[in-house]
Structure formats: structure tokens, C-alpha cells
Amino acid sequence: MARVAVVHNTLDFQGGADAVCLSVCEALQREHDVTLFTLSETSLETLARRFGVGLDVDGIDVRSPRGGSTTAKALSTAAPLLGPQLPLRSVLVRRSFELEADTFDLAVSTANEFDFSVPSVQYVHYPQFHADRVPDASGALNRLWSRLAGPDRGSFEDVTMLANSSWTADVFAGVYGVEPTVVHPPVDPIEPQADWDDREDGVVVVGRIAPDKRILDAVEVVDGVRERGHDVHLHVVGAAPRSYRQYADRVEAAAAERPYVTVERDVPRARLEELLGAHKYGLNLKPREHFGMSVAEYVAAGMIAFAPDSGGQREILGGRDDRLFGSVDEAIGLLGAAIERDQPPETPSDRFGRSRFRAAIRDHVDRALD
Image (cartoon, rainbow, N blue to C red; front, side, top):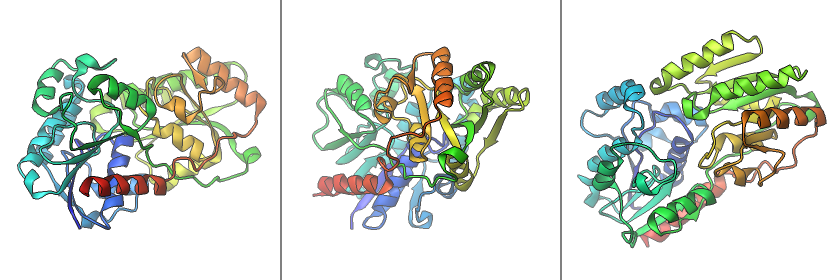
């Protein structure tokens, strides 16, 4: 049994990266002594229930920087003013970990790339440092955060790099000259609630209720499809962290004006799977999604999924031009056409199963320890 530190900047945004973090802890805790370093208000128990991860939360030692809960609360409160803050949280969490690094056999980052003083396995959702080399990156202070916690080219001798999609791996290689191994995130098949013909002609949007997810664009898409004569409704289902409270209020205001739009915040996993398994269509509006956990969940539930024609979600949908769109108007056209055809999807629902992910993580960790 090895001492393994899992390093994760925050669980507070309650998205796909956090599901990966919990799944990594779950995969490793049976064979290793696992400690999680993070800067979060959100508890492991809360997220384990939400994501349906069978994690023994009492078996994970959670450590934060000094004053961690107060700092996490302050950062979440100030998020609308501060803008991007994940690299800052990464700097603080790395500093906390490095004070104890020599007591661990291995570090496992589930929050992108770091400069660690010990051997590591690092899972990249998207490069967080050296924004000057990254397409569409932002953050005026990123150069400072990169100097404090980011690796340099040529500093990956004792590092195993993993990425959530081929697209992310290519972006990472452009920044650091190293091509990570692709390990898609874990998404188990979701039991259908009804046969295709008995499912509701409705759209489900899953994920953080946040500006980058463009939930209001999803409302516009459903508005447009209804204007074309299709009696379709929309369920918005997701977490609404305090960092995005202003945007979540705007989404709920838009829903209040439309009887065919429903918003459900912070629902239990069973309710999420009930909605996915009972509806025909899933919609994602975030362009350049690094992987697209919500898109993968739509596929896992036997839904027809639609997403922007960019990023890792292209891999999930096989590059199909009848599922990928470049604008809201194109999304309206694709969804309307699918409703008219009314044919069940052909994509297998078990492509991204959790057992596959756990086995891959254990294998890479065992190799790194050896």
C-alpha cells in the first residue's frame, strides 16, 4: 500500500472535473492510503451522492490550506468580480501539498498540470497555466500563477500525463510538447425509463448553471423549435454554485416566463437519471467543451445528443453533422429535424463505463509507483 496524494483545486464548481476527482479517489482507496488536497466548501459526501460515486468518504483524509473553508467561501463569493480563479486555487492547494510532499509516494492531480516535487500522475481537463500559449485562455495574472505552480517544457521526466479527450491532448502538446494518453472520464450507462416511443418529446440540459454553459442559449433553441410547430419542453438540471448565483437567477427568470421550461437545482442522482431516461433529447451549448460529461451522459441514457461542433464532444458524437452545430440557428434546425424523424439513436450507451476508467487509473498509478 502506497501513500497517494490526490490534488484537486476545488470541488465547488461541481462539474465533470469533480466527478473525475471522486472517481479517482474511489479507484485508488482500496489499495492505497489516499489523502485529498483541495480548497473547497463542498463536501465529498455531497458530491458522491450527486454523482453516484461509490466512494468511502470516511476513508479519505481531506486537507486544505490554512483557513481553507473561509478562503473557499470568500473566493466563491467574489467569483463574479474576480473572474477565472482555478489557477489561483491550484497555486494555494499545491503550496499546501508541497509542505508535506516528501511524506507521499505519489501525487495524482485531477485538476490539470502542476509542477510537483515528487513523481506524479496528472489528469488534464484543459491546460491551466501558460495562458499565452493556450487558445482562448484568459486571466491577467496567469503568468504569475504559472511561475508559482506550473511546469515548464522538459519537466515531465517523472510525470505520467493523461487527458480527457484527444482534442485536449493535442492542445496540451501544443503548450508543453508532451502528448498525454487519453483516458475518457467515467460515465456509466443509464437505465431507460421507457421505450423510445414512450419517452417524452423533451430536451434535458445537464451541468453547472453557469455562463460558460450558455443555458440561456438552450432556452433560445427550444423557443425556436416551438416556433416551428413542435410541442417540445425543456428541463434544466444542474448545480448552481454560489460563484454563478447571478447567472442562475437569470436562467430561473427566463424559465418563469415560459411554462415549458423547468429549472431544477442540485437534484439527487436518482432524479437526474429519471429525467435522462424518460426524455428523447439532450442538448449542450458550450463550445470547445474539453470533453463533455453531459453529452456523454445523454448518450449513456439512450438519448439523441446535440452539441457545438468543437472540442472533445466531437469525439463523443463521432463527428456527425446531424448532431453537431455551429450556431443557435443550426441547433434549432438539427433538433427540429430529429423530432420530425423520431428515430432512436444508434450510439452504444456503454462506451465510457466507470469500470474502464477505474482500471485505467489503477494501471497508470501502479506503473508510476513501480
